[in-house]
Image: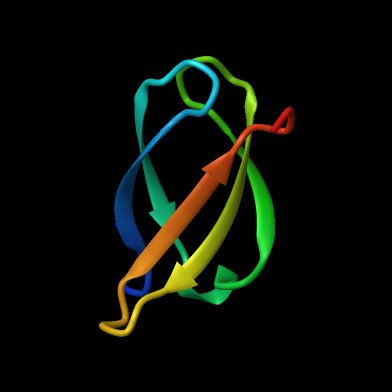
Length: 65
């Protein structure tokens, strides 16, 4: 069961370019964290923002940017 506060989202891995489904937690807004790609297993850096409507947006990048 998914925590009701979590938001499901799709991101593109900055390494392999594959679409990956992730769960975004509103408690992580403004915090940098790392989650491994489910396809290529490389570390994706995440930063979450909340838009005016309350939806979470994930900015992702590789550690080589």
